[in-house]
Every structure is written in structure tokens, then in C-alpha cells.
Length: 329
Image (cartoon, rainbow, N blue to C red; front, side):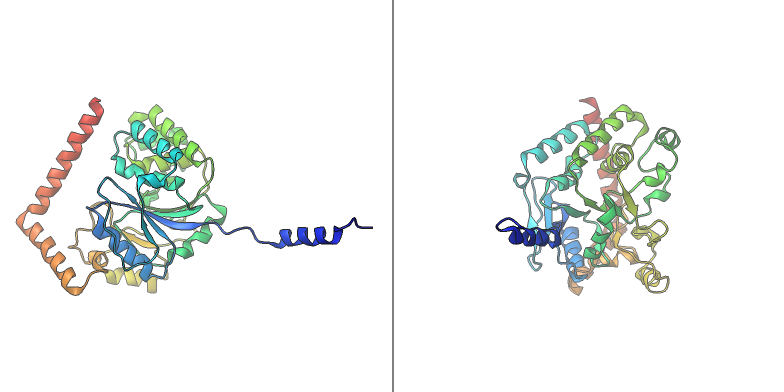
């Protein structure tokens, strides 16, 4: 005999067993300021035009937040006050301990304290080439997913002594390198502590490394053994997402259409996206023809007049002065 209400209890338990787990909250984080807002708005336009409807939250790079294009729904400009005290404490700690890096670049680590359980982070110098919602299922059995060829660089952009690093970290540690400019993550409670453990390893091996935000991710996933999937490696073999690997848009189309190799995005890192190379055309995709031609003309004039080279020299000098000032503190 069942006790009173026994059938109702069994029915309720069965319904609870059949009820699917709540879906993870998914979204996209960008970090931008007034200086990078044109690239940021072009990126947002490409995300939406590729069909992705996920919410996009823009973290301010500094005290001059980007002015965002209001044509697109679901785009929110955040402030530092939108993050919990725990996240701000974490950010301030890595900012104080990772003083060689611009604090604005370190704000990407606030993604771990936002509202999304699964998130995609992207730099601004990126153009979406597919619906990024289709990337999230890859996170099911992984902590982090990315698609880039950083693993082919031999560590030269992250490390001063790559071979010594591999001796300490083990075989294959150089091939675990990734770019911090575009990745997906399934946020777990221990990730903040993992990142601090990665930072502690960096501090203990300071002279081996080039101190930048990208290195922190590389070290963390090795030290804490995150489950990471790079879609550009076998067996998936996606094509390179770096614009420098393509001479023009036709080569990009041929790679996708003829070689049948997916490309999730195009990343214009390493001063590639000046606007003058044929592949840079995607950086103008959100503009009207008149706006595009005006920007292209200005880019050509800057190069012809030497202003572009002077601007690079000035930027390089400012970075060195800033670095020397930080090292002397």
C-alpha cells in the first residue's frame, strides 16, 4: 500500500527526473573604448549579419567607453560597477601583479565574473564569418574552445626561452599556445583560482616569458590542465583565422568553398588590418560605400605621406617608456 499522496509523490519525482536541466546562459563579451569603437561596431555588425542573436556585452577598456551602433538589438554597454565585488577584487589583483600589461587588456578576465555561464570573448579587430551560436556545442566536453594557428609559432610571441619552457612544462606544451583574441569558455567555479595559479607560475619563471595577457591563458591551461579544444588541429582541421594568412578575399572564399574548411572568424592582429591590404576589405563591411572610400583614401594618404610610419614609431616609443616606468616602480 502506498501512503496517502504516494501516487502524487511518485508522479512528481518522475516529472523532476524527466525535466531537462536548465540551459546555460550564453553570450558574447567584447572590450572596447572610444578609440576602438569603429572596429567594435564593425564586429557587432558582422556577428548579427551572420545570424547570431546572442546577447553582446561590451566591457569598457578604460574611462572612455565606446559609442555603440544602436541598429543592433541585444548589445549592452557595461560599466565596472556591473561586476561583483569578487570580480573587481580579482581584476585589481591581476592588474597589480601583471603590471607589464595594459590594464585595459586585462579587463577581458572580467568575463569570468559576468552573467554568462558559457561565453565567447573576442577582440575588436575581428570579423565574424559564421553564426557563433554554432560554436557553443563544442564546449560540452571542454573548458575552452578556440580556432587559431598560434600552436605553429613555436612560442616566439609568448616566450623568451621556448625550449626551456617545454622542458619545464613537458612535451607538447608549446603546441598548447592559443591567442587570447577569440575563444569560448564554459565558466567553472575554480577558474579564477586557476588563473591566479597560472599567474603565480609566471611570477616564479619571470625571465622565461613575454609578459602579456595571452601568456596567462597559455600557462593556466597547462598548469591546471584545462580541457581545451583547438578546432584548427586534427581531426577538425579548420582553416586559419588570422588575416595575415590570406592575400585577398578570393583566397578566403576559395578556402571555404573549394577546400571546404570552416573559418569561424577573421582576426586582424599583428597590425595586419591597416585597411590597405586586399584582405582588409572585411574591416569596412559595415560601412556605406562613401564611408568606405573615405577611410580607404585616408589610409592611403597616411602611408604615402609617412604619417603611418611616424605613428608606429610614436606608439612603439610610448610603449617602451610606459614599460620602463612600470619596471622601475
